[in-house]
Amino acid sequence: MNNLIEEIYPQIFRVSLRIPVPLKAINIYLFKGSEGWSIVDCGFHDKESEIAWHNVFKELNIGYNDVSQIIVTHYHPDHYGGSGWLQELTGAPVLIFDKEKKYLDRTWHDKSFPTQIEQFFLQYGIPNDIALDIKDEHISRYAAVSPHPNEITLVSDGDEIQLGKYRFQTIWSPGHTEGLMTLWSEKERIFLANDLVLPKITPNISFHVNSVENPLSDFLSSLRKIRDLPADITLPGHRQIITDLGKRVDEIIDHHGDRLENVKSILKNKLVSTDIGVSAWEISKELFGPLKEAVQHRFAFAETLSHLEYLVHANEIKKIQADNNYFYFL
Ligand SMILES: [Zn+2]
Image (cartoon, rainbow, N blue to C red):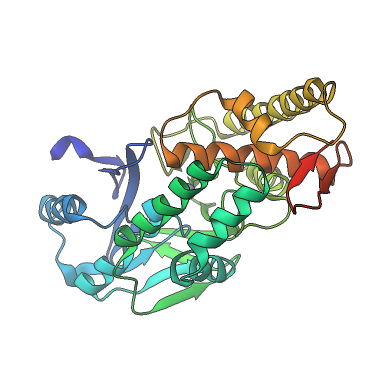
């Protein structure tokens, strides 16, 4: 267990918690302070992570009452999932951005949501069996986010939050989700990026039934907003710590520039043999190649869609809705 807990900065501990999705692990950050411990992000809730959490409490000598707050940076199950269980255990408040709440509620509390996802993706040309797998995959995640917190404390953009001995300010950073929270400590030059900036892999940017109209545009704006923060260390939601924030931000922005070009050229080539337009699925298949798991299909397809929507908003391509209600791109 020891190798999974690391003091990465004085009184800041990183725990690598296993998650049952292709990303494999999430970074949980624990801040030790005189007012108690602050936890940032929670992992999935399942039997295995319960055992891991109990080990973390034991290793770091944290009593349940020593936990003063639980910060959830966004509503995705790997970050939000264990928050309700941790609240039951510790009695600590769970803090989430006010801007994230309605998306969290729709994703996890609207019982018609899985069917909405299925219908939405079908309209963009995904095959029936894959749409059904994606729907089932969503339903299978309910267990990982249960129990939900009894009470959620809403915070706003620019609020100050004390994490252990460090003072942070929240930054609203939409794109990966609509109300994603990052935190910046100006004095200590620590940036808690969670899923806004990741090393080696790029955060998934999805256009889907529960997203805004142009999430990729939001994401690129969020990156530009934090690009020049003079951060000594950047703490991501997955994988290793980032030491050169500006460089990594530039790489991610470039990656999306390349991908937009790629999407445009795939569309152009396919338009040679049709005049009714091309479905997003045709483009996604070529962009990502063959995939196996429903969760990979969901991320890949929604990522393709976010790039197509960006190009539509930039007036570089057109989107039409045919008589059958399906969408095509031209
Ligand atoms: Zn996420």
